Image (tube, rainbow, N blue to C red):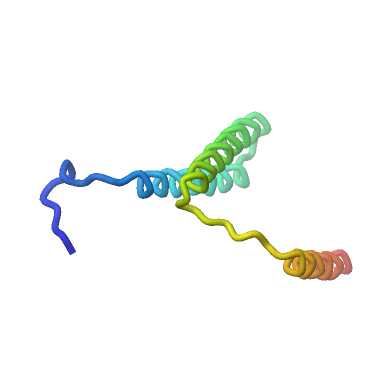
Length: 99
């Protein structure tokens, strides 16, 4: 492991910078989501929801940039996988509705 003497010696490449941005957007979404759950006033909740969606848009934009540059690979799901997921969702939904 290389020791860095000061922060000015640290540089991030494009991929690391985008990953850092993506992680930050995800953390912000988590924080706004928590605040939204705890918000007690309608105006506050509306403002928090606005900021949450702004972060969601930013997160998706960074994700798309990473995918376009080949830094984030997404594997397409097979129809069989999708069908199995939907069946599981329906099963759980029925269980919850029966309570």
